[in-house]
Length: 472
RNA sequence: GGAGAGAUGGCGGAGUGGACGAACGCGCCGGAUUGCUAAUCCGGUGUACCCGGUUACGGGUACCGAGGGUUCGAAUCCCUCUCUCUCCGCCA
Picture 1: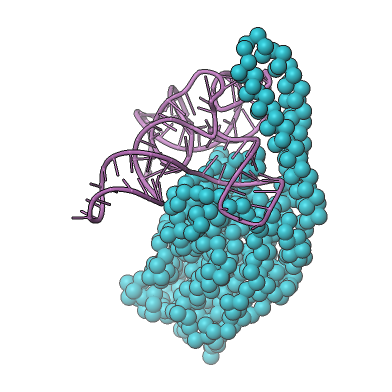
Picture 2: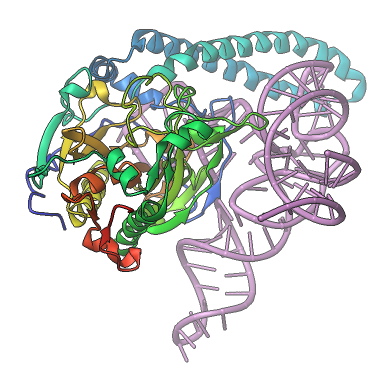
C-alpha cells in the first residue's frame, strides 16, 4: 500500500450522506437491463443531479452546500414548485383515472350509444389537457432550477472560496534543489531536441507542442508504466472513444456548464473528450448492473482535448496548460455505500501516489476546498507535484468522489441484496497525465551538463535507455 | 456519399384503434418431483412517479425510440425528430 506518509490523511470518518426515503419494489435479480430515460410522466430525467426527495428532506443541507460551494440555487423556489407539481400530478392522475375508466365503458357500449357517451367524456378530456399542461409548465420551470443544485460536499471538505484555500493534507518527498542553475522543461526539452513548441505554434496555434525523439518515447513510457501499475491493481485497461455524444458529457456533468471548455465537432453533434473519465464512467449508461459486477474498476488511456477558454495569459509557458494531452485515468463504479465509496476514494488516491513515488517525484496532497469544488463532486483530493521551473507545486492529479451524482444522470444502477435498483457511486482519479508530468520529470532529473536521467522504472519502457543527452 | 430496413419488457419476438403492461418462447426467482445433476410440472417475474399504511403491502398514473397531433379511447392512425442496422461507393 502507500508510501511513507500514507497515514494522516482524512480519516474514514464521514457524515452519513442523507438519503431520501424510497419505496420498495420487488424486482428480478441479477438482470442486466437497459432502460431508456424518458422525458416526462414522472420518469427520470437526465440533467437532474440530486434526488428531489433528498432536497425535499434535507433542504438545509442543500442550502448549506450552495453556500459552501458558492453556487446559487433557489432552494425555496424548488420546494415550492415541487409541492405544486405533486399536487398537480395527483389531480391529473385522478382525472385521468376517471377518463380511462369511462373510455373503457364506452368500448363496451353498443355502437349507437357511443356517440352520446363520448360527447360526455370529451369535456373531461379537455380538463385533463389543461391539468397536463399545468404539470408540464411546472416541470419546465423546475428543471433549470434543479440543474443549479450542487452535490453536497463532504464534511471533510474545508470551507474556502478558491484554490488558495485548499488545505494541504500531507507531502511526500522533498522538493528538488540544485547546486547549479537549473533549466526549466522548455529549455531542457529544446536543448535535448525532444520538444518543439515554436513550430507547433506556427502550425497548430497556441498551447500546442511536438514531442520528438526521446520526448515522444518518454511520454509513451510513463503512460504505459502507469497503465501497467493499474492493471496490476486489478483495473481493466480500456481504450475509449474520444468523440462522444452529448448524453455522455451531460451524464458525467461536464455539460451543461462546460460548453466553453470542450471541443465540439461542426458537422456532427459530437464532443471531444477532455478526459477518459467521460467514456469510462458512461460505459454502462442506462443499465442495471448485477451487484456481482461491482466494483467496476477500469483504467483508460486517451487523448484529452481542452479549449482552455478564459485562460489567456495564464500558464502560457511550456507544457503546463495545453489543448491536447494524453492521460491514464482510473474510474470506479461501486455500490451505493458511503463508506465503501470513501474507501475507494482513498485507494485511487493511493494508486496514483504510488506511481509518483515510483517516479521519485515530490508531491503533496491537498483537500480541495468547497469553493474550488465543482458542482458534482462530494470531495476532491488533488496531487500537486513539485516543479522546479515554477518553484512551486503544480496540480498533476485530481481524485474525485461523486456519490450517485453522475450515476443518477447516466442512469447506471445495480440491484442490491434486496433486489431494488439503486444508483451506483462513481469515482475517478488521474493516474498520470502527460506531457504535464514531463515537466517535473525533466526538471527534477536534469543534471548540470544538461542531460536528463531516465527514472529507473521507465527504463524498461525506453529500451533500457538511462540518459537523455543534449544533441551535439 | 447513394439505396433500403427497423426501433416493443433481461433477451428473442407477436401485436394495425378499446378486453394490451402488452401473446408466445427463452432467461431468472420460488415451489413440486428427482439418489445428485439434467429434464419435467406449477406459480411468479419491468421501470418510474403520486397517494395511503411503521413494514411485508395496497391503490392510482405514466412509459411499446423521442416530441407533437387525431380520438371518448393510441404500441396500433398522422406529422416531426433521433438512433440503430444492411447493401453499394469511398477510406485508415
